[in-house]
Image (tube, rainbow over all chains, first blue to last red; front, side, top):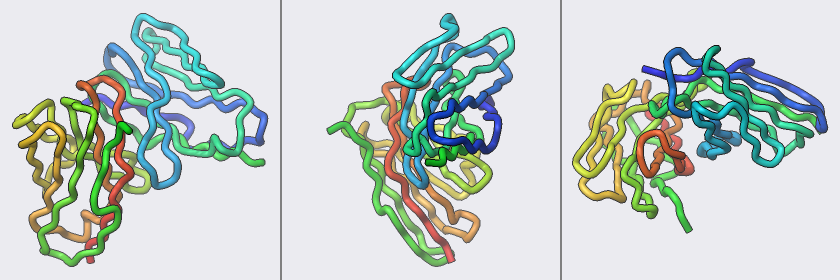
Length: 107
Length: 112
């Protein structure tokens, strides 16, 4: 089975700082998705990047994909307290998730 | 409003008492799946369905059953719940495998 492994497991930053979290996977992919989960709630889709894309932006989110290293990163710029959540990646279409990165943004 | 609904949202039950958690989507999605989430383990897929009458096991199917008689509904059945099935359960749907998934609000199940 194919699932992403997020790193770090936990990240704590101050409001206004940038947050970077990483995802590694093992086999070839067609696309990779990032999701966000507020405590105890359902996951919400953030962004999908295809294997032929290297970078994608959505508002304060920037996702990169390096298929040669089998890794992706999610950058949240100018973070806010409301960004506090867990973030998950899902490579390809296996719809599987790792343990996620728990982001805490302190006001 | 496009959404995935789950019922009940909270359930406390006893070992061995059969229960069903319902899941319904109004987006005409073909793909639906069930996950459980436990602390430190992330989300683990229990079962998924590619379309009506087509279901398949995920990573942790033991102790669970599903059915997909209609496109919109994908109930999760625990025939004989045990305490190790205490968890937070999510249903999700998408137009197809590999597309954006829409998640329900979750069902918190406690088996005593």
